[in-house]
Length: 179
Image 1 (cartoon, rainbow, N blue to C red):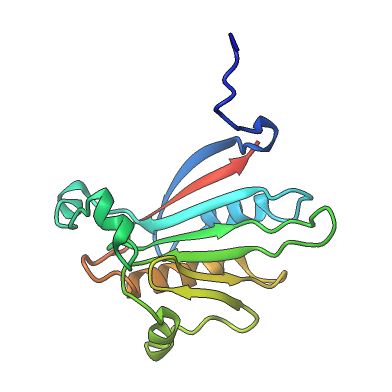
Image 2 (cartoon, helix red, strand yellow):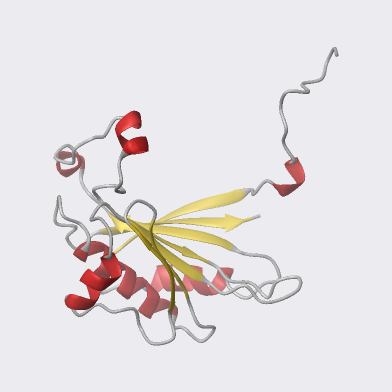
């Protein structure tokens, strides 16, 4: 068939277009990230997601071991420098979809147990959905959760799961707003 690609299956109506914004922040100033969370929450469609991680200078990043694509594929663990994600909830078409958090990390199985042993249990009302060595932690959040509390818990948990470098007090959030 001329002019058509029958070997590619893609439904463009379901693709997600996002606008990105980078927010640099610290443990003492999470207001901009919390405000971004509030602005994306509660709509009938998911409002986007935010990736949160330490903002590491280039010289520190050079100390982080790089895994090959094949090594990452067959490894039973996630990345050496953890990354947290918050996903906006929505009122949904048929039923509400709760907001979720996730942390991809390289510390192996039972990360929630280890976080609890360090005094960083999931807060009350947060429902654990996954704690996997390679795919990380996933939890659903209650509707009344305070965004600043979410950011602070993600920072503490991510720092506790970071074994290679000290994440310090400089953090970065990449906000992906659905358009």
